[in-house]
Image (tube, rainbow, N blue to C red; front, side, top):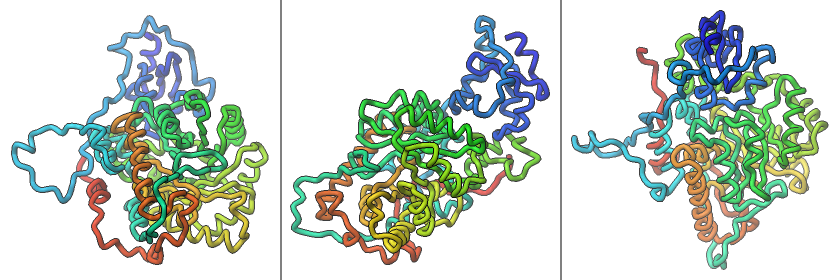
Amino acid sequence: MQEVECHNTPDDCWVVLNGKVYDLSIFQKEHPGGSKIITDNAGKDVSNLFNAVHPKDIIQRLLPPEACVGVVDESTVDLKKHVVAAEGKAPSRGPQPKSAPAATEAQQVQPWEKPPIDAMLSTFDFENVAARTMTEEGWGYYSSGADDEITLRENHTAFQRIWLKPRILVNVKNIDMTTSILGEKSSLPLYFTATALGKLADDDGELAISRAAAKSGVIYMLPTLSSYPLDEMLEVRQPNQVQFAQLYVNAKRERTEEYVQRLEAGGVKALFVTVDAPQLGRRQKDMRNKFTKNADVQKDDDVNRGEGVARAISEFIDPSLCWDDITWLKSITKLPIILKGVGCGLDTVMAYEIGCAGVVLSNHGGRQLDTARSGIEILPEAIDALNKHISTWRSRFEVYVDGGIRRASDIFKAVALGATAVGIGRPVLYSLAAYGQPGVERMCSLFKEELTMVMRLMGTPRIADITEDHVLYSNLMTHIPAQARDHLQLDTYEPLRPATKM
């Protein structure tokens, strides 16, 4: 370790990562998260700091083999002197209720206490707790949306422009919400979509999410940009559990082909190719955190300067991805391919024509292009385009929606308008951050309880009974605000703030 200590300058920068010594003298200048986080810890063991966010195999994906200069002698490592600790979880300020009465002086000095998990009655409850328990960096990454965050908020608001038309005197004693997604059974028309960096929420990250999905009987889509290596996410799969996988296509196609082969060998059942992220949206909350913590981040590059956590994990995404690459992907795998991030009816039809098994109508959780339409608004357009193209499309093609699903009534509305299922992302992360794996299980059970109630009150005992006749959506595309104030969404939303002195 004494030798590593000597290489402690920006131009001569060594660090220890999980027992191996790496020369980052060149890479630190190109590090998407800024050089400061590396150079400040040159000559030290940064394993704890690194492992708190990154999957271990990202080293092999980003660094050339020659960057590894040796193996450290563990007996020479002084824990106090050489080892950098990971940032502890400090409560963030989080969103503050706007309509709460003024607190008394006695109330103001009382520390906030996390409520018991049984007190969680909606996804907004989990979001509120997560905001107060996560680090600022983690909360900023999870909660941030693109630019003015109009689409981020619209994703949920859009569902409120769809009204329900219940039927009466239907035998709804027994409710069956089970369904099939790409031929795989699910306990309800919902799956856990891919979300990056699960360790920002909980140390078990994606492993806890996968276990919770298995217990809840829902499908989990493994993320490409995970905190845990692929092999570990595959290893926790339970007997008969179904896992899908997200795929960001690497600019180096041979790496993508190798990754797809690993997914196939690991028993993954489908590939969801992300197609709405040729470059990252500008997410101010994430950018602001990175700018204040590492002021030299990409200081000679106005575009990359403050992209924060998001920029640091996405360097290998390829902006040249096009339709020809989808044809190529189909040639290297037998897995069904679904395009994730489709934003219009025309592209939905093109996905069908090229031989995809489905699409996810999505705007990436409002994190890419602000004022892009919500997935639920695109849904009627996509279904209409498919119906006009070929009436038998449902025999080999499915349509999903994600973004803004916070209530079981949202699931019902999506199914009524033609979706096979919906994907949820932030509710999974927030419940994980708030209470770990039990939180995710509790969150999913709330969706089931709500959906049972909604289906019973709507007179639809089975998923197949839910049709377009059960909803009124003529105002969906008008973008007229709902008349009733949505207190839960508005009171848990943390507004963007202008820059202040630093």
